[in-house]
Length: 97
Image: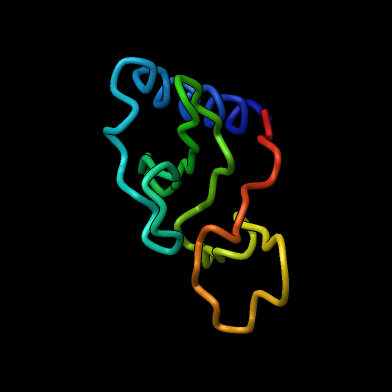
């Protein structure tokens, strides 16, 4: 339990500078939306959403896990497997925090 707490504290600490430099992370390649970015911390991918002046941590993934775009982005209309890549039809789920 102590290791888990230290890991969470370290992940939170890693994101604190985002208030001053929110675009410092990279665009998540699986998503390709400028406002959805990631920081790499050790073996973890911290994925966040920029919205106006707010920053929402959407998820934290261990890099050994396969990241699936469908877990982060939800389709508003139609079937996501129909091949339509028009991102105006996609929306973010509610923030986790």
